[in-house]
Length: 390
Image (cartoon, rainbow, N blue to C red):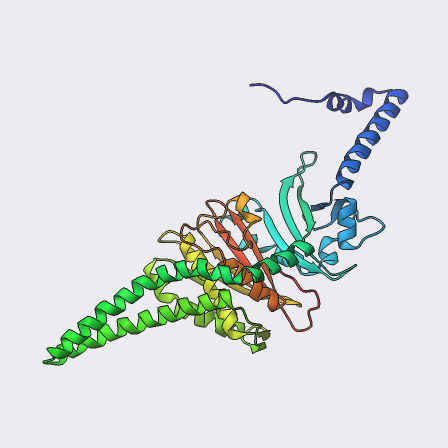
């Protein structure tokens, strides 16, 4: 088996104790030149580059990163968690999903910085191990997407009318099956009414009516989601018990979860801080995320729902044991019309992100192919001042 390849510099470093003063000085100068070259390359990038250790302490930051996070005198040794409050908890969701502890997953986030000036920043984190000492570290890439975000929002607004046509095709398809079912069962009711003779026939009619009622409820949900997508409205904020809303949605989806043989493991506290939210929009967020989790899993899958709090935020994590998300799709998850589903319209997570943003909240997604996905929602408590976006 071939051995590892070593550069000439590696060979020299391997016999440092054999170098005389002149050669040692030459080596130091060479290392300084190579470091200066690499720093020069990194400092030409518009993206911010950070390297942090397992505790969030910054080992390296290029000039763009310093500008983005508002540091003028260097960042080595500073804590990223202190510079961006709330980011640490949102990046710590990997432990919620069974199997994600086999290696930290890549993660993508978007958040709003208010200092040194308001801007929207996209974060992309890739964990790695330092070969020199085996320590766990992460490379962080920061991109200022303020203009892109504004352009995207304008694009969505300008294309709203044309998107109706795109959505209408999907809605028409979704409406087809329940409408057919309604038609068939209404015909059965009509026939049985004509032949009504006894209690058994009455029971059969009641059963058919129940089927019709369920289908009408399903239709109502489809139409409501359709209208929310094409005509978003500002949230009607009020003091809301998040636990109650989540339990309502889980009860509503219990039958479908059971039909798919998906086990639900709910880790819900008896109480949680009341948040300022639109109850109906909150239901839509929970419904969409649970639906996505169901569709990602095979029968026998497991959905874990956990609620926790800290001094600043309330967190809701949805962890599934599904197929996971490909690395190349991670950066596109919140893009309008991006979907990996054959019949999807690609607006589900866009709607979730918009609702969370309107609530001053944050959506974080971590995933490993073949293991599962964790979606973490972060809701600010009333005294929270840093507004996370996703």
